[in-house]
Length: 250
Image 1: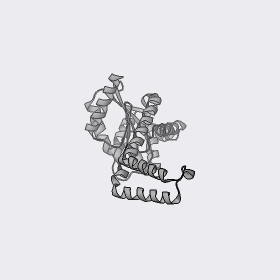
Image 2 (image 1 turned 45 degrees about the vertical axis):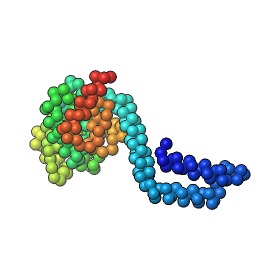
Image 3 (image 1 turned 45 degrees about the horizontal axis):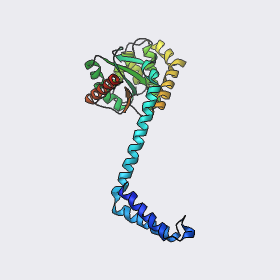
Image 4 (image 1 turned 90 degrees about the vertical axis):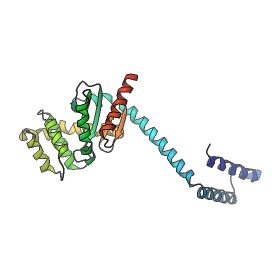
């Protein structure tokens, strides 16, 4: 029991003993005023109590959220790892899969990309699943539609790599310029972009992200763990090593 909790119990005990039998179930206005003053004075003298309580509450909430996310990952594992409409990079038969939710206009996704590409080259057993998750406006959705359509022409990687390397202002014209540079058939591209299936893929990714509690990019699922934000290559190594260890232990 914390010092603060002990002090509060002591105050309550004294107040109850002082209260007349007829009102033992409630505090009088004077007792309430005295109790409020004691609590106020205690918190002024011991502000660390509030901080410790907040930290404990935050840690408990974070642990509960992580547990719910882990349950969701297990429940949606097939959709995460084996959706035939999601592009796959690295070793398709790798022993560890990294699932990335990303947005082509997200600067943090672009910051992550060099480390992710380096990790793919370094680790021949890493499999990567790309989940289009356009949350930064209409241009992001437009770029995701192009990427999904590019996959139908076998040019997803060519488009994806160029988009991730693109800096500066990104608008529809810039996205189409990248598509041309990637060697896409533009007429076919526009038809595929407008298809109901392309829209359905994006909507499924939104729903999956929502189920996992993903509301920002980049987000990565490795093993049973969800990691938010860009990490460097050492961070990726640690996550992958942990996933392999968990897999062997299961």
